[in-house]
Image 1 (cartoon, rainbow, N blue to C red):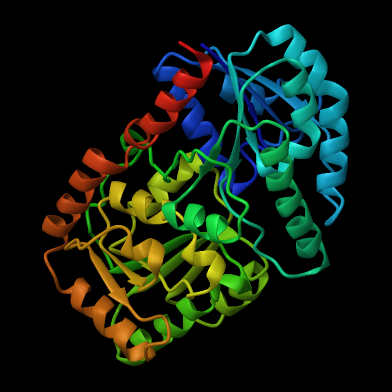
Image 2: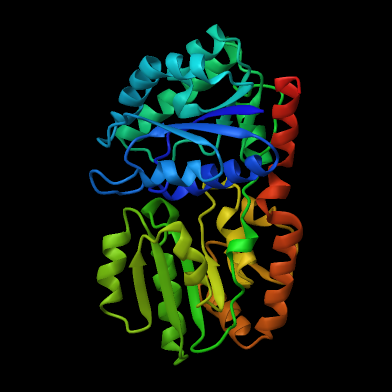
Length: 379
């Protein structure tokens, strides 16, 4: 079974690219040989050294092809689409693919070659554009265009990341039926449960953007510190608030900001934690999300305090999840965190880990996609 996956993520470099790598690994275990086409320059490597991205893909017998994508905001989609149109026909003609996954950023540059080769394909939607800048408006244009092309140029369905995203696109009259939900998953085997030793520590990792109101983490920490509680807060990631966070960390001895971490270092980072916190705002885009970070924290056996929004509610009622209204007083957040610091974290953490093993592993979350691909391929 041969699958072509066209993604706009720089594998190993973009934080969100862990999904592509994890899904590829899971589908490989289900019998698929995957060829990934993605922008060049993912994992940093020295000139003359083997491409680390190719090694990550190739270790499971899969294949990687790199294409051009400008890093200049607003030009990425244009250069990416142009290079796909140039190179994809040759790759398709040599690959003998049964089916293809095409992320919405790649539809414009991919659909002609796939249609001409009679390869059934699905449009993959891991997230609509987030930013409202000029570059963001260009991305929104490309997002709407991708769905229009998918609906008129023969896509065999769509693969959104959540039911909320599918429902939203259906309301916007741009969904491509049938739908196969690909929920965020986690490779549980890569995570070692926290042992909850040392100074109580709050952890958070991910995109550190103003749009996510990430500075609220510092505000919550300041309330806890004002109560005289001995604790640490460790934040890892990258985004447009990283510099501000790093400057703020110089003012507080309880705050540590690490910046971006390679995906293989995240499990070790989480083992230092006692409680994970995510005060994500209740914006339209965030309501459509699939809670990847929450599932990773569960794999690490971490209890967590989250904003009471749709993706966090989708986890269901769990002893290890505490939901707080995003606009609630900071004291409410601090109260819940302080209460967890005093709780039986080992017992709560075991519940989180067990739920992750049963429900959140990529082997479970990719099963609907595997069945749909098998159906389309006629296998």
